[in-house]
Image 1 (tube, helix red, strand yellow):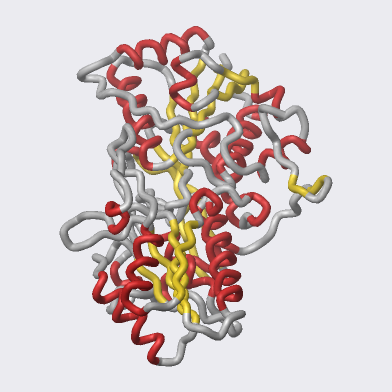
Image 2 (tube, one colour):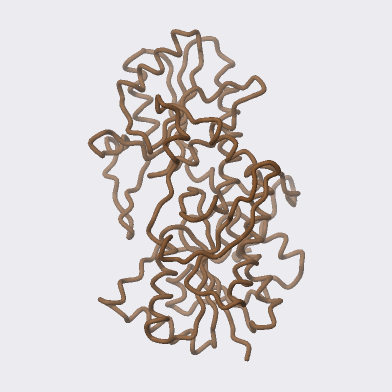
Length: 409
């Protein structure tokens, strides 16, 4: 008998999370093992409230599939909802699996990052403990590129492309004046510096920016930061461009940005970070008395669908399809991953890895991919990142603006 499936999205959106949704939905709709294909609205939180959409109606034709592939943000909506440990509270699990039974759901595909894989892990553990016949598959997603077991993550390549282009353009803008200046570009990344490292891709062909790069993997020092800038100014660099992760912290463990806000935490215990560039801007002004500006890319780096990486889109779509294939082969309690087969030519394959080695863990930038001084990245990291930003999709434009698929339209 065919069983139905449900797909959800969770955590921070990306430029290609909907490409994975399109891949899962398209493959599920074509599967001889799957009946109706539902999308849960606002992730597991919406699932608990029985909020579904019919993905067969959403993707009524190939044109809709292609449009969804190029739509940024999260078409189904997202959430930051943490399931309790089932040893202390089984009520949410009972509600969820009762809904699965009611709607004859035998497959769950959950698209998300670290915290979303915690949900996959818990739901799979409950299903196995209580003998529930539901296969649960995690589909990776995060611009932070910090999921273990996978070479990289859907969303990272597009964010890296946007960051590199933005830093190059910021560098061009800064050079129009001849008086000394320092521009500090704050880039997302709490504990992992993959996104900030992507700023290095802006260099080459006569583009020197960024001159300095600071990642959270190396402890930050105000004294060394100012010394680095002073050295560049002394070498005749008039307009210094700095890329810095929002999550850089001092030796005592406090974030640089904690001087500007209370750093409230979310339900997963993560501090909300912002303001690092502004703090460093003030330090530069006080030390050198020159023009300094802090620029925070913020959500722009994750929602730039008009400048996404075609490689990222196609890989995200394919990993969605591969998740359905894995389910058809009986997999459950796994996350799909990318396996890099070669750098030249760039080639990857897809595999399933047990969720227990992924949930609630982070992959950071290896120290040997950061220079000895802790203020730049190595050529090895550049070679790793370069293929991920390649290719440009044919964005549908109407009245001068990109057209996306929206549930509110």
